Image (cartoon, rainbow, N blue to C red; front, side, top):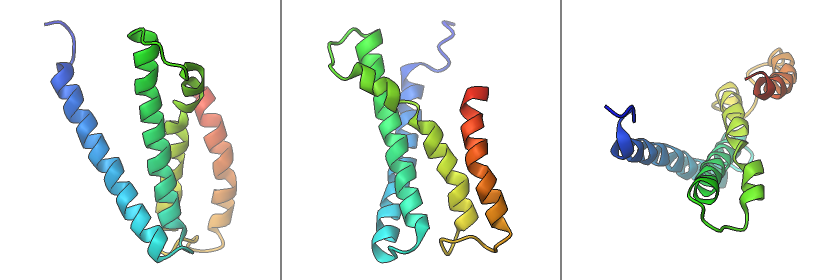
Length: 127
């Protein structure tokens, strides 16, 4: 056993499942944003898909540049784009909170929403 935890075939299968999930989310988000432009659910879902795919692609770019030694020009830029998965994951609770109408269920939720950016700002440095 080499300790590879499944090898390249398992990684490919995981990446393909992830791509189907995020691209499916992006497709639904585009349809929702076009049909109901005032509803935030479609726009937040689209932002989630875009940030997650951008972060994922930046990660692959960084592997190609720094681990495989390819001569690619945007390495430093991708170093800043790769952590966008944190912002993408921060959008998911907002989608759940504002589902299905694209607004908060009641005015009492404004306090929770006001404290949420603080939680999101504290999370990355703590982990």
